[in-house]
Length: 100
Length: 488
Image (cartoon, rainbow over all chains, first blue to last red; front, side, top):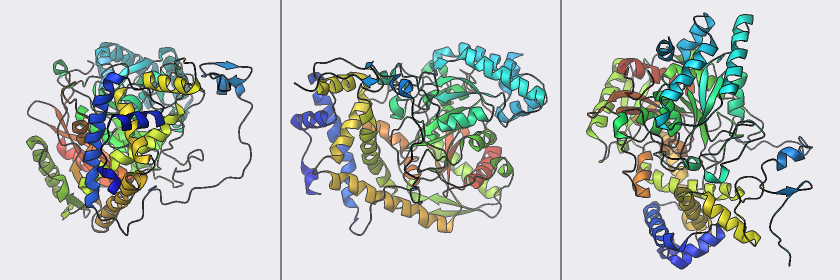
């Protein structure tokens, strides 16, 4: 729990925005910082609950996730896969150059 | 003629179509006129008239040939969270403004396979994140009640609720993550049903929070909800969380009554901040169920107050992961930049709205190194306690009755603070976290003339009993009001 004492500041917002791949304009950073602090302050009330013997609950389905055999079930739909791409060429997605 | 057609609800229209009192084409055209008449409400993002007319004509052929299916010829709207093949699907987001799916969601495919006619796509909060429909990229949707006051239809299925209440759709699909079907249904004076998690396939629904998202119907009546859910639900191999469990025909449960059933009244749902009119109708509802032969028991769900904090960790965490796919590479809008990382950042920074960005930031924070245990894992543990509260109460009672919302609808633009907005879902979030089915139905009007919704919660996969109980309440409440902004 000790980590929760740290309050979100603008450098933290910059770091989280970077991890989230979100460009946040300078002008809205202070408001966003305040909002995040309010929300994190609100959720901090969970600290009151004793959960020392409680197992985390990730799924409510109660059933084991089914497995299927490792076989191709679909394919040869290159044109459909690329149909909504902002840019494609010769059957590939195109992105800005990543190698110098 | 036209106004006569709008008077039919889903079930009575289906009977009238079978009796050839009118054709699906006539009914569909009446709905297009209603859409036009109520266009100022902003419920529809896209109408697909040619497609609808073709579907209606095909339905009329099936009636003629005696091959009508359960929803044959009935015109409905689809929340823009459902992928519809070759029909724009934006999740009310700028980042998907030109996205045209090459496949159909399982739930909508089930509806078309059962003969329903698609009218168009309905607005919602962006990526279903919101409780007022104010985060939609293309602007607010207006509640047809007190139309001159510009009230919120609720959210996130605000377009669906507004359209059904305004009679510009006979019924609509919605999705509910923390209350997004039940809260707008309550605000708009209609019925909204969130099934058990796993009842409806999530395949082809734009993902928000995968451990919570569930599709369900928004309709005028409880019977209509049963008719819609009959078609929407079903096991789907394409969704690994879909339940492999047969759902009985819900139409057989409409008149089963509730004699001898036990109804739990949780003491944690009557805290401060609930409007007096809602308290009054909550008490009335308790009495109605008692008069119908149910036994009323006071119960306790002690971790209720922690449901919202748990939700506002888990839902943003899952959302931050799900929304990582919008990277401007495979689909969606791209903003050009010199490097790949910058391209991601400007694409996502410009494409997502404020609330979505806020939730991605919260989600990324609670999942980040050093905070994961303190926030995310802690929330998952308390989520188990909330589920166990329900498990314990369902040892004693069959159904739980609560208000749907702490207040009736509010004016658009009036609640600016995100935390105040989140409190709207205080009564709907707990059942979502436990994966339980819940239904909201209108039981009365408050002093200003706005609808009041009451929620029933059932144990997992007891949609049949939920329908029987809701029908008893519906008959007692006799809610026959129509929104002043509805099509005429």
